[in-house]
Length: 299
Image (cartoon, rainbow, N blue to C red; front, side):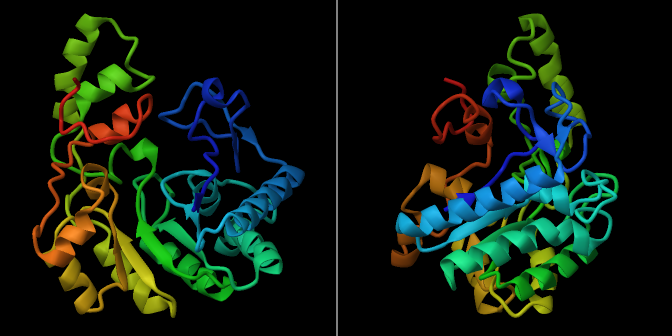
């Protein structure tokens, strides 16, 4: 069970509550709300809520949980100096920024013992003063000391665009129809905006295995398993990564959306690569519709 708090990466119109963050800094994408800077008491309450969620997940029969420390959500916001500009014990140094995560681990361990708590964390992002691999390695070492069971290495925040789910062609048409920022624009404006987005919003390179180098560096720094995700969708790449001990595991998302049985197909040799074309329509349309593969088509 993955456990997350959206922090400032949501809207009051969606939650019915004011958005919150380590610091009152407006998100460049979810820019309708100025998030409230969390008080110390509110931070403690959020820690307790994470611990309660972990306890409930164990009681419900999940094999473990994963704390979402990546992609610009609340715990990720605490870890990044781009979004955490606090001057108290919850900001400033890497140790202070990590404090909220460490407290979740400490209090959860008191409740659930050796129950596996994994994390998904950012190795880097595209923000000024954001996460960089050097600090990510420090955080990974702290996670190891905190009793983390495994680290999944990801990247990016929503402000960066689709850097976490890369492909050459941006899903501009889907964004115009289903993303809250664009869907209510007049049709003529949308017609102009689509080619403009495609022309000017270039995806960062590489488009495949884009977290692997960072995951290798993090694996070298810790004694716990490391998982890599991002642009990995065929058995040759998976075998090369795992058999050469670059990381311990490989994680996929989009390939499971189009083919939930993809691993079985890999195992029995009937397929060596996912049928996913990485159109990313699933991520965009999933904002309003049930998650499924759209294969690059709106209707």
